[in-house]
Image: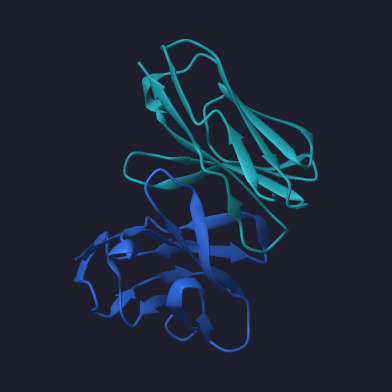
Amino acid sequence: ETAVFQTPNYHVTQVGNEVSFNCKQTLGHDTMYWYKQDSKKLLKIMFSYNNKQLIVNETVPRRFSPQSSDKAHLNLRIKSVEPEDSAVYLCASSHSYTEVFFGKGTRLTVV
Amino acid sequence: AQSVTQPDARVTVSEGASLQLRCKYSYSATPYLFWYVQYPRQGLQLLLKYYSGDPVVQGVNSFEAEFSKSNSSFHLQKASVHWSDSAVYFCALSMITNAYKVIFGKGTHLHVLP
């Protein structure tokens, strides 16, 4: 099956903890993204990588750090989570300029 | 600055009625435009895309969209909606000048009354 796979589906953690989310795509794409979707469904791009190189780094807090081992994997680490980090994190991939394919998302709840 | 505007946050229609969801974009060069749908607890799924050529594009599940350069619009349409079309619909813009930053509108929540 070719798609974008994210783990975990859900994660509940306490303020101040560190979390990591994994993303893998088997579509052979050269670009991967992390989007944050809030409770109102607003989508905001956080990072994009092209062939393992960071291309886009929107204004996100420094506690967020993407990690790419190869062009099929793009993980997201959050050091010391805060309540406003509660959201759905969507991983996606594409070839340059073409349509973006999304994973099912990781829902983070910070208590 | 480049942007995508979906002016209707919520749309409610009856099953069997026709549908139009509006999308306006702001971008000076040639846009690549998309419509996505998001069902509850799911990621976004592509409905249709426009790169060039015929301004009317067909998508999955009988959706279609019409690109208008003069109006900077890319409206989504369906002749007859089904209750299962209830979801959030996003219009998106990919830019030739910045291929790695796809911009999404705020989404339109569609509620189809059975």
